[in-house]
Amino acid sequence: DADVTQTPRNRITKTGKRIMLECSQTKGHDRMYWYRQDPGLGLRLIYYSFDVKDINKGEISDGYSVSRQAQAKFSLSLESAIPNQTALYFCATSEPGQGYRGYTFGSGTRLTVV
Amino acid sequence: GENVEQHPSTLSVQEGDSAVIKCTYSDSASNYFPWYKQELGKRPQLIIDIRSNVGEKKDQRIAVTLNKTAKHFSLHITETQPEDSAVYFCAASIKDDMRFGAGTRLTVKP
Image 1 (tube, chains in turn blue, brown):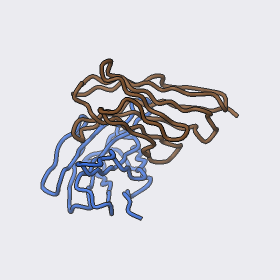
Image 2 (cartoon, one colour):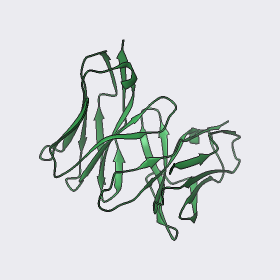
Image 3 (cartoon, each protein chain N blue to C red):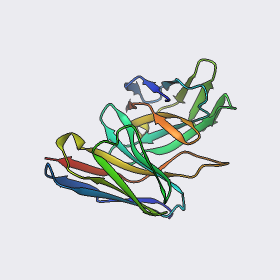
Image 4 (spheres, rainbow over the protein chains, first blue to last red):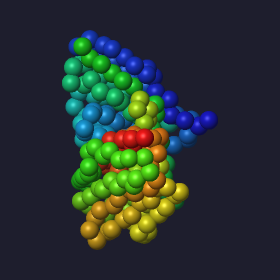
């Protein structure tokens, strides 16, 4: 089935370590997003990409970077992880145009920084 | 940019009762309003959506209403069941720039 896959599903890392979260999709969508979810704060946009050569900052990009390796792959990196980056991270895809139906989310990565 | 507020943050109802979740948005240019359901430990999934040229949309036990003048939209769930228990997110979108509400945790008590 066409879907959005995130790896790893869970990760515990130490403060100061570099970590990469990966997202791949088989939906053929051009647009990909990284969101962070904290309790009571909903979903906040970190970075988004409309195609392979397009990268844009979202509302909370500080401390994060991204790479769009291919249409189907969008990775999120924490260069030097800190405890307040402990959260649930979601990748999402969308395809604008007629019949637009919002985002398809990946299964999420639960990250804990100790 | 767009700002979406969602109320209430928690809602508890008895099985069989109705549940209503309300959202307001700030940018009158927003033209697409989806609702997502997130079950515990799972990803948000689209359950219903409405576009700005429509005032109401219904799909079985769920319905969404949109008041463009007042810039608010609501999710209505009738005949609630325990499996409706989840966190529900509203969102407002302008050309695929989507902003989410903070979520409502709905609990349906058997």
